[in-house]
Length: 308
Image (tube, rainbow, N blue to C red; front, side):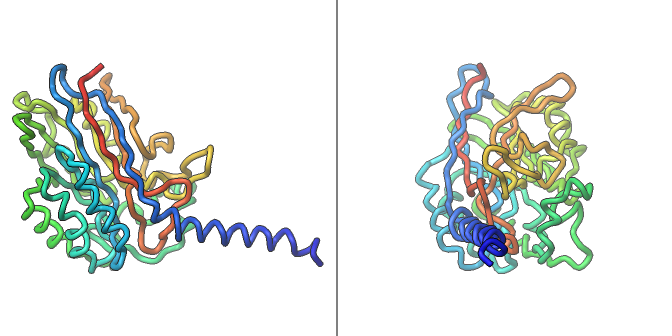
C-alpha cells in the first residue's frame, strides 16, 4: 500500500507546499533592486529613477501599500510608473494612497491593460502554454467583448493632480534641478493602443536626456524606440515570468519578447542602433493568479550615469 500510494502522495504534498510558498510568502516578499545604467551624456550628474510597475492592487493588500509608501524614503530624482496599477475596480483609492508619498516627487506614467480592464477568471494553463497556442498570456492581445471596465479616469485624475506627466502616446519633459529629461511614452501595446507615429522622430535636440516609456515591451515598440535613437527604454508587464524555474528562468514573457530579457537590464538593437532596455518584474499579480515562484515582486531604483 505504501509503495503504491507513497510517491503520488509525496508529489501532491510537495505541490501543496510549493503553492503555499508561492502564494503565502514569495508573492508578498517585496524587494528593492538597484541597477546602474550608463546612458547619460558625459559630464551630467547621475539621475536616480524609481520605476514602479504592475502593482495590480487588490483591496486589503496592506503590506503592499505600506511597502510602497516606504519607498519615498529613497528620495529619487523622479518616478516612472509603467502601468497595470489595478486588479480590482475598487482599488483606485488604495493605489493613490500607497503612491501618495512618491507623488511628492516629479514623475510620469503610462497605463497597462489592467488599468483599463479588470481581469477575469481563466485557466492558468493558458498562460504557461502561450507559445504553443501562438498567443501572449491570459489576456490575449485585445480585451474581451464583455470585459470589466476599470475606473481608469479616476486613476488618471489622481496622478495628474499630483503633477505626474501622462505619457499616453505623447511626450513630456521633467526639469530635475536644471536638467531637462524628455520622456516619450506609448499606450499599452498589449491591447494595441500604442500609436508610435504620434511620437516618432527621436529625442529632441533641446533635451539634456531622453528615454522611452511603455507598459508592454513588444518588439515593434522596442524597434521603433531604438531606431529613433533613444538610449533607454523602461517597460513592465512581464511580471518577470511570474512562475520561474530555479537555474532555468522564465517560461513565458506574456508578449513577444524573448525569455532571456523577461526582467532586468538588457540591450536591444534595431537598424544598427542599440538601446538599454529595463523590464521591471513588477510588484503584484493578477488577482486570480496570486502566486510567484523564483521571481519575487520588486521595484527598481535605476541610477543613470555617464556613458562608458
